[in-house]
Every structure is written in structure tokens, then in C-alpha cells.
Image 1 (cartoon, rainbow, N blue to C red):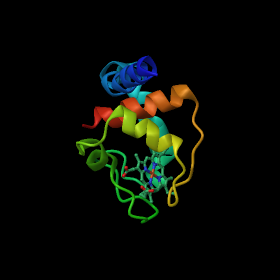
Image 2 (cartoon, rainbow, N blue to C red):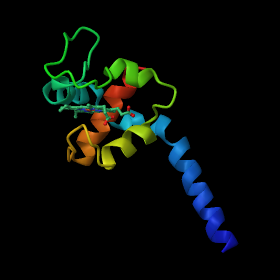
Image 3 (cartoon, rainbow, N blue to C red):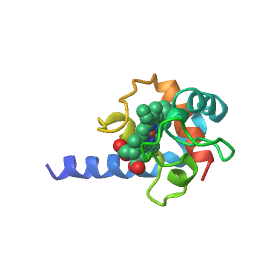
Image 4 (spheres, protein in one colour):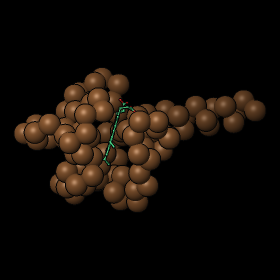
Length: 107
Ligand code: HEC
């Protein structure tokens, strides 16, 4: 049991420590084009984008990216959990990597 907890502890640590490396896996330009196509209906996804069509109070991506709490881990977890006010998109792992890379590039 002691060993199991030890292993889980390392796994949790790795999940926090890895993002800095894993973020470079995605293609931020591809992520940006997904964001412009899909997310921009509700979020301001670039610095120059005009107001989104839907005013639902969704945070602008730059503002979201710059929150200290926004990490790769947190973004991935957000995508994997159901939301009440945002559609639950099903992205391929590659699309997810690209979106994560794009959002983190706005930090
Ligand atoms: C139909 C409108 C809509 C679309 C389209 C949309 N969102 Fe959202 N999003 C919201 C709303 C509303 C919130 C704020 C409420 C919430 O957090 O559930 C939000 C919140 C978020 C958050 C912030 C979570 C936090 O911790 O504050 C992230 C990240 C996010 N969206 C990413 C995306 C991405 C990436 C896309 C495109 C793939 C997208 N959203 C498309 C409406 C939308």
C-alpha cells in the first residue's frame, strides 16, 4: 500500500511537472485556427478579434491564459469535464494538443 501511494504521488507530480514539455507537442497555429472557427463564437480568442457573436460571459482567451491557475493540466481537465454553459466538444487528442498549445502561447 505504501508503495502504491508512492507511485500515485509520483504520477500526480509528473502530471503537474510535464506540461512545460508536453505543450510544445501541439501546433499552436492549428490550434488558433480551430479557436477562430469554433471558440470565437463565444470567446474573444485573439487580441484583435472583435466582440464574439454570443455574449455569454465567456472569458477572452488572453485573460484566461494569463491567470496563474491556467496550466496545461487545468486546460486539459476543463476539456474533459462537462460544462453547463459551454458546449462539450469532443476533440481528437491532436486537436486538443493544438488548442492547448495555442492557449498557452497567449500567456
Ligand atoms: C456557445 C458558446 C461557447 C463556445 C462556442 C465556446 N465556449 Fe468556452 N466558455 C463558454 C462560457 C459561457 C464559459 C464560461 C462558463 C464556464 O466556465 O463554463 C466558457 C469558458 C471556457 C474556458 C474557461 C474555463 C475556466 O476555467 O474559466 C475555457 C478554457 C474555454 N471556455 C475554452 C473554449 C474553447 C477552447 C472553445 C473552442 C473549442 C470554446 N471554449 C468554445 C462558452 C463557449
